[in-house]
Length: 103
Image (cartoon, rainbow, N blue to C red; front, side):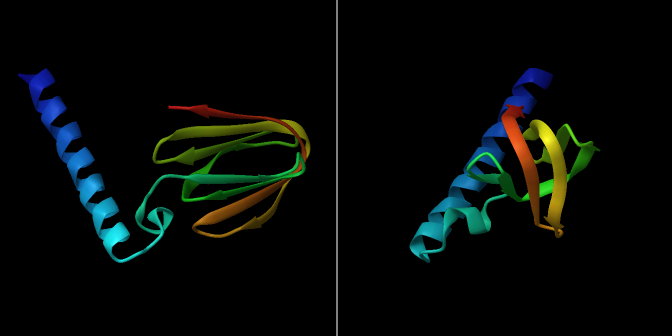
């Protein structure tokens, strides 16, 4: 029973996301505006811009771990620093070597 119940919950969430996406398309609103998925944009290997993040898990000059609704985003490199941070966005700069997504 528990397994089945969990399946229904996941299905309902997926249906709800589909409704959000349909409404966004009908109103010609970009999907990322209504979505809670993180959007990661890189500029070369020097800057990462993350939208829709939930918090910072770890921050050093060599690693930054960011929590999102869809898992953890890990950025590794050297001379890492936070250039800008708001409730919705974070900009990380440095010599970026790698970006990993862990669900």
